[in-house]
Image 1 (cartoon, one colour):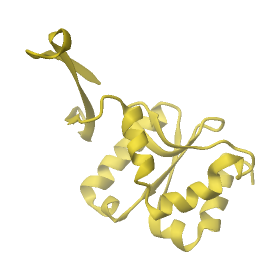
Image 2 (cartoon, helix red, strand yellow; image 1 turned 90 degrees about the vertical axis):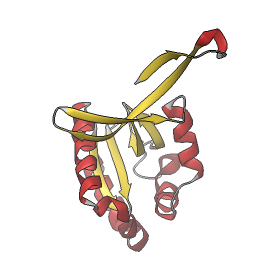
Image 3 (cartoon, one colour; image 1 turned 180 degrees about the vertical axis):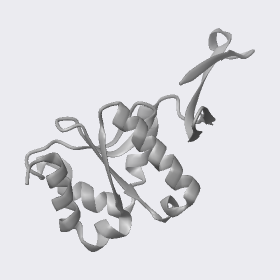
Image 4 (tube, one colour; image 1 turned 120 degrees about the vertical axis):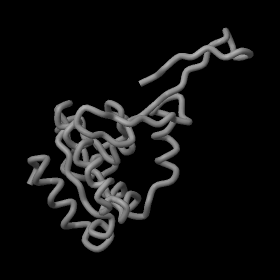
Length: 149
């Protein structure tokens, strides 16, 4: 979501400030200003700073290596950026680190998944350590969810 504000000295006197939801509660969404003018530029930055688990899973998903399905990484969808997304199957794969065990973050993740489901996107989540310990089992679950196994 974007809000245009007028500021003296800015080109044409106007700048855009972008916001994204930080935490949602029924009937209330808290937002935070984004330093990125678009989700696309934020997604590019996130690709450069991938975790080891994301790099390992991407090596197995890229170039149609899993059942011929095309996956994209750090894909903007609605107000969110998905770790991995297959448009053919409307399937998002999210990898969660230790911070996602926090009750506040877990509630945010649940709300985020609910919103994405409302957009028609199925979301499956894995812990980073599961990807690092048993990548093949994670790929098997993704394949079953995608209907290729």
